[in-house]
Length: 399
Image 1 (tube, rainbow, N blue to C red):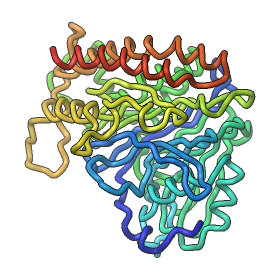
Image 2 (tube, helix red, strand yellow):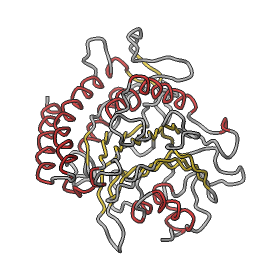
Image 3 (cartoon, one colour):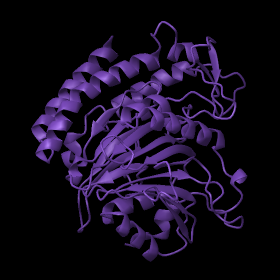
């Protein structure tokens, strides 16, 4: 079970992310939800499946595109319904610890291999040789209804149980790039994104919209600054350009995932990984199920012969068009053409992608409801659903 030093040191550092875990006790259908917008320097992602080996569990998740050997997972789920994600924390490690996030992805991949539930994950951490070379907030849900964040540095972790009403009275917890343990929170990052995510979650709770669709609409595609209150999606904003600093959806946001767990009485194989494999503003979501294996993942999300996901690459090319103006020749592009993504006529790229996403969801939803009634996934029906969704998306991209 040990992670080697070479694996720890080879890990590419993460940048920053925004995430939420929602307890099944407050969702309309009783299923927990776990969401992450991945912000990273890796331009594109693919969805990959890893078969069971050496007595471990099979699993799938988001990986960087173009790599021959995939050792890291950035959000994923396994055959037991155990799911994990992370957000880098910039204040959880002691000041004398220079390690930021050396092994986050590697550790998550290993956890998916060996953990069936949250109890296993805690045992995994308790028995893992230290130092762990991580500084992060891990989010976990399982098929038993458990849901929690773990704020972790190289030597200790602090658990936040989303089902505990004294810890999460509203039934959800938000994490960006700071932790509530460790050094002062101001030494972390992502505070404005944290404010905005909480604001949207309060709206969702009031309106009963705690669903994957709401999360993709109002969180994954949030263009608002939680501190200043500026929201580019507000009808009153009619500017051509927008400034992305401290908003949730940014140039470095390369994918967004909502893992919809199962109720304790349901088959873990029905855990659904709703995935925007590219930039949320230019890419529609598609679902995948670990039990479907590699062939059950749409070819639009899988790696092609070049190691690239067609859906992620299409989204990247559209994103680059919106960010084509670099005013100061900086390594990070901060200004983008808002009118290309969103406009009053409803013809913006993001608006079109959200319409496509709705059509794709309409393809899969009847099948998913049928599988839930039957208690298991049907691979032939999954193939038919993938084919239908691929036809819709391919036709749209060809026009």
